[in-house]
Every structure is written in structure tokens, then in C-alpha cells.
Image (spheres, one colour):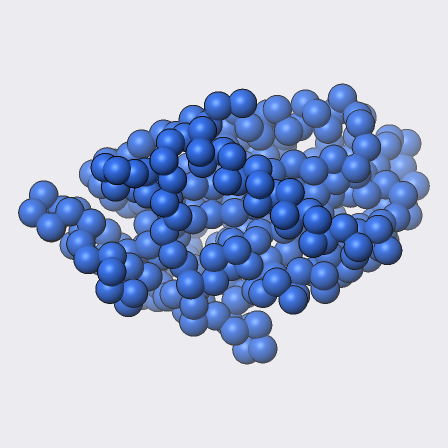
Length: 296
């Protein structure tokens, strides 16, 4: 499958972000302070300076981290806005109150102080937005991070965002235990559980830009990353896998730079690793792939 990259101008990025911020404010969650206020200032300044300075000095780690974070976080909010803004269920957006908080930079997060909580909610909101945009309407009130029903299959998704490679095993065990509990309830339709892992910090703890030669090269790198992460996770999966847990979603978000022209792209990747064959799960994956770049 060939990679498809949707380019955005800075004007588009800024305008889309402003629309998303207005939506958050209209839902009752001010963004005039906090981390999104910083991102807004950064993108506004970058938009103004770009004709003369371009992306600026990415050799400066502090500057690069600030720019990369603003671009990635603004695009995530745009995705959440596009997927959930049409929902009439207030439960769809209630976690925005937590999402808009947190430290400005992901490198400032610490699990010990729960300062990673805001971005954890961001991952859950993004998944709900992605599935909603794919026509797999999320159902609320199940206590799962994401739940939907497709063709008489009730699916529960537990989303985890490990901070380090060492914490991936813990995240897997906790998610599988949560899913096992949900799958014990008897219903007249089939039930299935999926583990969703955001491995962005695991593979890119310093928030660096990934150089790629082409869209095909980008796909090769990401598929290879999926295989590597699954190989590392396999022992834990094998020990903790319970009936009804049907697969894993692997998510990454990072900036990639296309060489030699240096064009930047915000990558939102969803890798699907099925544990069994089921046409309903194949259809789910197909739907996600059709919208993952559209929503971003």
C-alpha cells in the first residue's frame, strides 16, 4: 500500500487550529491560558516569519522542540475537532476539560506527578474522533476508553500511552486485565477487546524530526517499527492474552522531513495487529485507513 501524505500550508494549519480552539471554547473550556495558548502564539509567529526564515533553526534543540510540539499538538486538536464536533452527546467532549491542561512540552511530562494525564486524555479523544469520522460511532457510558458496535460485534478499546519502553509491558498487562473484565459480561451480541498503544514517546522521547526520502520510504519505516514493537511486546502478550482480546492498534505521531527539500509532514499512524481473522475487524481497519489522513 502506497503512503498518501496530505500537505498543509501554515495558513491552513493556523486557520484549522483557530477553528478547533473556538470549538473548545464554545464547549466551555477556555484556552486563553495554558499550553494551547503557547501553541497558538508559536504558530502565529511561525506563520508571520515563515516567508523570510522558513522553519527556522532546527539545529537548536529548544527551538525545534517548541515548534514540533506546537505543530503536533495543534494538529491533534484539529483531528479531535473534526471527529467529535458533530456529536450531540455531551459525553463525547467532557474530557476536553482535562485535555487542555498539562505541561507545554511532552518532554516535561512525568508519570509520577500525573502531568502526562492531559495527553493521555488527548489520545483517548483522538481515537474516539478517528472512529467517529470513520462511521464507527462511539458509545459512551461503558467506562472503556472507546466502545462501538459494528455488525453485531461490541468492541471495547483500552488506550494506553506508555512513557518509556520499560513501561510498555505494564501498559499491556493493565489494558488486557481491563478488557478481560469487560468481556466477562454476557450480552446477546459478540464482544471483543482491543488494546491501543500510543508509542510516540517510546520511539521518539526527544521529540525529533524523522528524515525520509519518499512516501514509500516512510511506509517502510513505519511498518518496520510496527514489527519491532510487536516483537518486543510478544512475550507479555502471550502471557496475558485472554479469550475475546482480538488485536492491537499501534499509534505514533511525529514530524517527518522529506529530503532533500525539507518539507515537513505531521504523521499520524495507526498500525493494526489482528490476533484473529474476522471480516468485521478487517472492515474496521479499512475504514480507519480511509480517514486517518483526512481527519488530520
